[in-house]
Amino acid sequence: MKHLALLLSAVLCCIPLPVASQLAASVAYAPVLTPCPSGVSLLREVGTVDQSLSDGEHAYVAGRRSEVLPGAWGSYLAAVLKSMTGVTNLPEYVTDILGGTYGERGYPHFGIVTSGGGYRAAIFGAGVLNTLDGRNTTSVEAGTGGLLQAATYLAGLSGGSWLVTSLAQANFPTLPDLIFGPSASGKDSFGGWLTQFDLLAPSDDPLVDGVYLLDVVAEIMGKHSAGFPVTISDVWARTLSRHFVNGTDASNFWDDTLKHGAGLTLSSIADLNTFANYAQPFPIIIADSLSPNGNESNVLNETDIDVPLTNPIYEINVFEFGSFDPTLSAFTPTEYLGSPNDSLCATNVDQLCFIEAMSSNAYNVYNTSVSSQRTGAPVGDANLAYKAAAAVMELVVEAFSQLIPESKVELDVAIVPNPFHGVAPSTYIDSNETLLQLVDGGEDGETVPFMPLLVKARNVEVIFAIDVHRRQAADTEDNWTAGLSIIATQDRVAFFTDTYSFPPVPPLESTFLEYNLTKRPTFFGCESTVESGEPLVIYLANGGPPLGQPPLTNTSTAQFTYSADEIDKMLSQTFDIATQGIPEGLEKDPLWPACLACAVVDRSRRRERIERSGVCESCMERYCWS
Ligand SMILES: *[C@@H]1O[C@H](CO)[C@@H](O)[C@H](O)[C@H]1NC(C)=O
Ligand SMILES: *[C@@H]1O[C@H](CO)[C@@H](O)[C@H](O)[C@H]1NC(C)=O
Ligand SMILES: *[C@@H]1O[C@H](CO)[C@@H](O)[C@H](O)[C@H]1NC(C)=O
Ligand SMILES: *[C@@H]1O[C@H](CO)[C@@H](O)[C@H](O)[C@H]1NC(C)=O
Ligand SMILES: *[C@@H]1O[C@H](CO)[C@@H](O)[C@H](O)[C@H]1NC(C)=O
Ligand SMILES: *[C@@H]1O[C@H](CO)[C@@H](O)[C@H](O)[C@H]1NC(C)=O
Ligand SMILES: *[C@@H]1O[C@H](CO)[C@@H](O)[C@H](O)[C@H]1NC(C)=O
Ligand SMILES: *[C@@H]1O[C@H](CO)[C@@H](O)[C@H](O)[C@H]1NC(C)=O
Ligand SMILES: *[C@@H]1O[C@H](CO)[C@@H](O)[C@H](O)[C@H]1NC(C)=O
Ligand SMILES: *[C@@H]1O[C@H](CO)[C@@H](O)[C@H](O)[C@H]1NC(C)=O
Image (tube, rainbow, N blue to C red; front, side, top):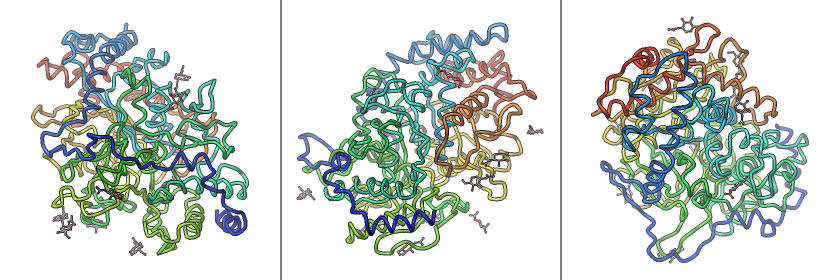
C-alpha cells in the first residue's frame, strides 16, 4: 500500500485531473440550491416524552399494517405450521395472533436491525434476511421465511447500511439478486454489489487505481463548487456508489462518463413502487456525531472507541434526518438536508451513496485536515482502519491541498450543514456548531442499530437483532462477535431512561462467551413488565460456525473483495446459523421455527392477557436469558 501512495503522488504530479465540470457524476452529485417551496418547514421538534413520527412515516406504517402485514403474517404462520407438522403443535394463541383472530391490533410489532462490520456484516446480514425472506422457498420450508415481509422496520449501520440502502433503492429484490445482480440489468438499474472489485483499489494495477481514485475525487468537485464542504467521506461515497447504488454493473464499472449512482437520493425512494405499496420494511440508517463538544467521560472503556455514548445518534430515513435522543429531539426533511435557511433550500444532499458513506465513515481513526496535514499514526486501534485507508488519505489530502487549499474542515468525517443550529442550547452539544461532523454509526461501540427501534412512538415490541461485529479483546481477535455492542446499547439507554427502554443483558463480554450467547439465538426481555416498555430482543450473532462446519463467516472487516463462490458459501453457512437454534451436537434444534414464532408473538400474547403454554413455555425457558 505504501507503493500505491508513492504512485499516487506521481499520478498527481503528472496526470491532469479530470475536468470536474464535464463529468456527469460530478454534476449529478452536486447539491442544488433553489427557493424553498412555500410552506416547507425545515425543523420539526418532537419533544422528549410524547414523541411523534413524521406524517410520511406515520402514513407508511399505517398503510403497511393494514394492507401488507395481515397477508404477511398469514404466510409466515403457514410456513411455521407446515415446517412443524409432525414435529410439534403450536399453542392455539400463536395461530390466533398470526392468523388475525385479534385483528390488526393483535399482530406483532416487529422490526429487524442489522449491524456494522464491513462486507462481512453486509453478507451475513443478507444471509439472515434471506433466511427470513418469504420469497425463498428453502427459507419457507425451513419455517423461517416470511418474517422479512412481516417486519415494519429494517435498520442498518455501516456495512449493514450498505445492505439496507441497496436493498431499498433496488426496489426490494431478493437477497441473491441484490448481491449478484439481477439476470437482466440496464444502465440505470442495480447491477449487484460487484464484490469482485475492491472498494478502494479495484484493479490489480496501482496506476489504474490511482487514475480511478482521481476520477472519484473529481466527482465531488461539483459539490464543492456548489459551496458545500467536501471530505474523504464524499470520496468514499462515490466509491461505495459503484457497489451499493443503481447505475453500475461489471461491464461498465470503468466507464467514467457514467453517473454511477450519483443523483439518486434516499428521499426519492418514496417514488419506488415497492415503497408506494408498502411492500418494504421501512428503512432507517444511523450515523454517530463526532462532536467537538462530547463528554469524554462517557466514552465506552474499550481501546478503539472514541465517540461518547451520550453524543447524539442521528438517524436518516426516507422522510427525515435528525435524532429522537432527548438532548435534541428534532428533525429536518431528508429531501432538504443541508439547506441554508427557510428561504433557500438545498436538494440532492441526501444522496444514497453519501448516506452509506456517512454511516460507514471510520476514517477519523486518522486525524486529518488540510491545515494540519495527516498526523502520522492513526488515532485509536489500527484494526478499525480500512485497508488502503492510508493510501487514500494520502491521495485525498494531497488532491485537496491542490484543489481546495482553503479547506479548513476535518477531512476524515462526513460533513453536513447543521439543520439544528440554535436548537436546544442547554442540552444539544452541537447547538452552536454550523457543521455536523458525522462518523460510522458504530463508533460509540453500538454496532447494532437498536436506537431507532427503541423510540416509543414507533411502538416496536419485538426486535430481531443481527450482530456481526467482531470481538474487541485484542488477544482473542478472530473476528467473531462477543456481545460488546448490545452491552453498549444497555449502557447508552441508561443515560436516557425517560426516552428509551432496553431489556437487561449481561454486562460483560465474558458472560456472553461463557454461556455461548453469541453462538446460538438468545432472547432478551422475556420477563419484562408492561410498564418497563422493554422490547423483546431476538439476538442472533455471528459468534462461531454452525454444526461443526469449518468457519467461513468471520472474515476480516478489512476484506474488501469477495468472489461469488465465497459469498455463496457464506450465505449458505449463514442460513445454517440462522436455522439451527441451539443445536444438539451436529443436529439443528427441530423446534427452532416454533420457538422463533413463540418469541415473535410473545408481546401480542401478553397484550391479549394469555398465559404462555405448550411448546412456547419450554421454548422460552430454553432460549431466554435470565
Ligand atoms: C434501481 O433499479 C431497479 C432495477 O434493478 C429499479 O426497480 C429501481 O426502481 C431503481 N431504483 C432507483 C432509485 O432508481
Ligand atoms: C459528563 O458525564 C459525566 C458522567 O455521566 C457527568 O457526571 C458529567 O456531569 C458530565 N459532564 C458534563 C459537562 O455534562
Ligand atoms: C477503563 O479502563 C482503564 C484501564 O483498564 C481503567 O483503569 C479504568 O478504571 C476504566 N474505567 C472505567 C470507567 O471502567
Ligand atoms: C439564506 O441563505 C442564503 C445563503 O447563505 C443567504 O444569501 C440569504 O440571505 C439567507 N436568507 C435569509 C432570509 O436568511
Ligand atoms: C487532531 O488534529 C488537531 C489539529 O492538528 C489537533 O488539535 C488535535 O489534538 C488532534 N486530535 C487528536 C486526537 O490527535
Ligand atoms: C452556545 O453559545 C452560547 C453563547 O456563546 C453559550 O452561552 C452556550 O453555552 C453555548 N452552548 C453550547 C451547547 O455550547
Ligand atoms: C475465524 O475463526 C477461526 C476459528 O475461530 C480462526 O482460526 C480464524 O483465524 C478466523 N479467521 C479470521 C479471518 O479471523
Ligand atoms: C458452550 O459451548 C461449549 C462448546 O460447545 C460447551 O462445552 C459448553 O458447555 C457451553 N456452555 C454452556 C454454559 O452451555
Ligand atoms: C481479524 O480481522 C482483523 C482486521 O479486522 C485482522 O487484523 C485480524 O488478523 C483478523 N484475525 C485473524 C485471526 O485473522
Ligand atoms: C434461497 O436460499 C438458499 C440458501 O441460502 C439459496 O441457496 C437459494 O439460492 C435461495 N433461493 C432463491 C430463489 O433466492
